[in-house]
View 1 (cartoon, rainbow, N blue to C red):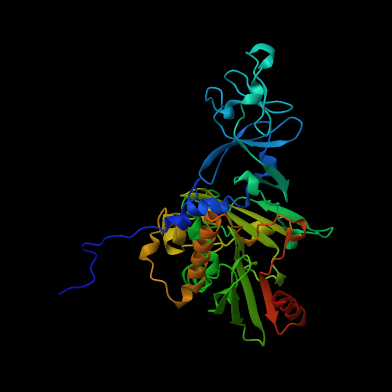
View 2: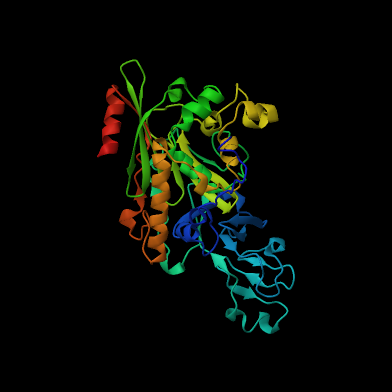
Length: 400
């Protein structure tokens, strides 16, 4: 008798507590404990822009005086969308009856009412705080009473005169469109999966990065104060060992050093920002002397970028997009069979569950800072070549 067939198969379910991001969802509330990048600075103009972040529809604009604002789209008067509003010196005017709201939702005018609205101070358009830093607009969508400081990151500070700060929202690795159409967790937890690199990015799709990255690593995983990190050792066969450190930092930061193996502390960080439960964007910041650094870093398939491949090419040379999207819009996590090489993924999921419980109890999750002395974040991820004096010194600094 045949056994193990698919007859009668009953599929499992996602870990929705981890995967879902809308208001009131368990991990959605963790994400709302932090500032999130929502757009590039140049995206905020006097033409209102629709944004969808963490399952919420919002309108981004910049007043004529230069201040950015992020408001709920439905006008509190009669519900017309502020997407069709007109931006003025101090706010945005609804197209329907002309009510004007400033960047903090305060009603400045009700032009059809006597004296521009005798009681206009009694209404307020729902809004979120925004700040501009590193060429991005950051929004805080959480409890106003618990608003933390916007962090800074040492790897992005003190640029040399010949360095550029590179801002990118087109994803990473050439693995699909800028708006990725599946659940964000499938990408974020992949950062703690170094074993897919020699299979997906080498055996299937050729040396998409470097021959060294195709070597099967020896890996250890560690919890950190801010998340989980992997330490990958690759024997390069020339007396040197590549010590590669990657991190996930809560709530949704990816710390992945260059797969082209530039030495030392990583020069780039990425934020995996959910649009909703089945779409996300990646905002990447990098520093380099070459302003095209991130574009040149993208993986190729037999020398061709992802967008130039046809369906047969995608099937023959799959990348991160194909592997992660094919898990489903939201992966059925209960069907996973995790093994020893999935230890990092399991650690990420356990730590996420721990933060959900902490936030639900009113606690402060890792990396949330309210004191200026705690605002600067030290990044430990990077490529370190043991056997080389300079990079051994850098690797020792990570351990310290």
